[in-house]
Image 1 (cartoon, chains in turn orange, blue):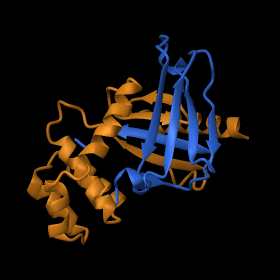
Image 2 (cartoon, rainbow over the protein chains, first blue to last red):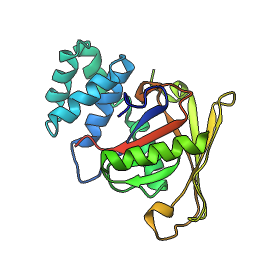
Image 3 (cartoon, rainbow over the protein chains, first blue to last red):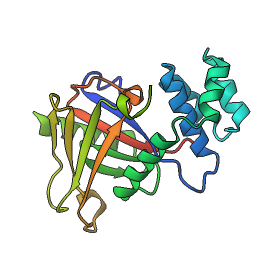
Image 4 (cartoon, each protein chain N blue to C red):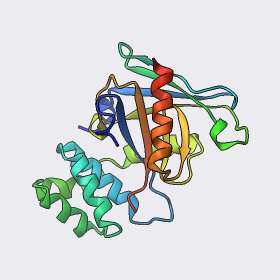
Length: 132
Length: 77
């Protein structure tokens, strides 16, 4: 979809690990560790493909698959270097009343749940028209 | 990297009357963009909520000047 709207749509990913998903938070922190090494999106895709295999050893293995430095990545993960950043996203989501995933804000318009491509296209087209 | 200092942008989300349409104000100089969150799509009126969104540059795809910004809140698990 992003390719379809190349140049006209920007996607921002925000962490919203749900409390019932006990392995999710570490995965979100790991993704940010990958991001610090310049591999956020490849790691992001790897996590979605691998879910829910998110044990520490899994998370480190995905990083090394992507060519990241194993020791540095493990250190980042073990120190929980990005715990506060993930928590900040969770706090922001809660403030917006976002308690289920995925939830989208399309130019500020709330879209809850995984909608159809057609629905997204319609909302994006409307947002583009409003910006003209 | 990845600390608060790496957040180059912030967003203000203002949830107002459900009857109002959503509008986004971009202010690249101040690196601040205000989002009015329309709650019309979910029916029931909600309480006024004003929050500031920030994000890491590494978690963004697409150009900064894009007319449409999709913020996705998701869970890997």
